[in-house]
Amino acid sequence: MKAVLYVAHGSRVKAGVEEARQFIETVKPQIDVAIQEICFLELAEPSIVEGVSACVAKGATEIAIIPILLLTANHAKQDIPLEINKAKEMYPSVTFTFGKPFGINEKLIDSLQERVHQKSTKQNEEIEVLLIGRGSSDDSVQIDFQQIANNLKRKYNYALVDICFLYGKGPSFENALEQLQTNREKPVYVVPYILFTGLLKIGIQKKMAELGFSDDEVVLCDCLGYDENVRQVLIERVKETLYSYREGVLNG
Image (cartoon, rainbow, N blue to C red; front, side):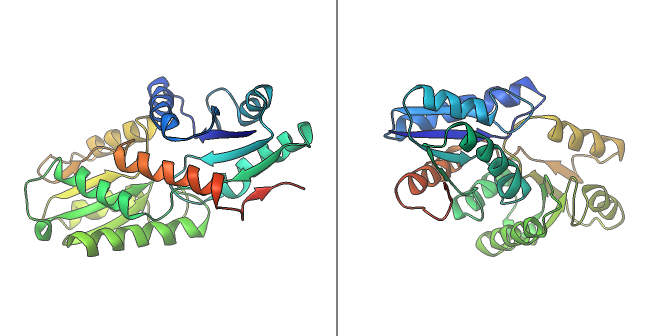
């Protein structure tokens, strides 16, 4: 019997965990699988192993692991597979299939456009955008995030789309803000490329306030969030993992 196990990141902020739960509940009715469970990579419960156990307790023999992650980094390459390997030892007769993170997707490019235009009535040619990623020690994250920025600029003809990260490799958020202080001709629209409201956005707001930016200089947009485009991308990932994607089978 097939099962789907959604793996959200988790957060120390209760509202962030609840956002993830509510979002996944809206996806479940679109997936024709009886067993669907939610778990978290860290900072919330149930854990991945506990999520697998819940699926098995309901009769699952094939479990599709669906990471709710924006980009492919260490969480997808190392952390989640490590937990699945623990589950495999507990349930050797169960087959696990591992889906892909959201990656570079046109629907998410459209969502970034929506976030900017929730805050601006200007023509795109007059707008500069700064995308903020969580960051990672994985080089592929910077490459993919730069591609997302390039796609956004090309598709919607912004004056500039730049990137920075809250931690890890690549240009830092702090350095990006310092550059904005010394080279500011147009207001910059800052879009956090993160899914949930949590400590990361709070930290972004705090840093901007410390540097004394006015709303005319730097406009903080809403996070990417769990909108309809994100929902459709997740549904795509679930269906391809259940019915077509086979490279990620974790069995044997």
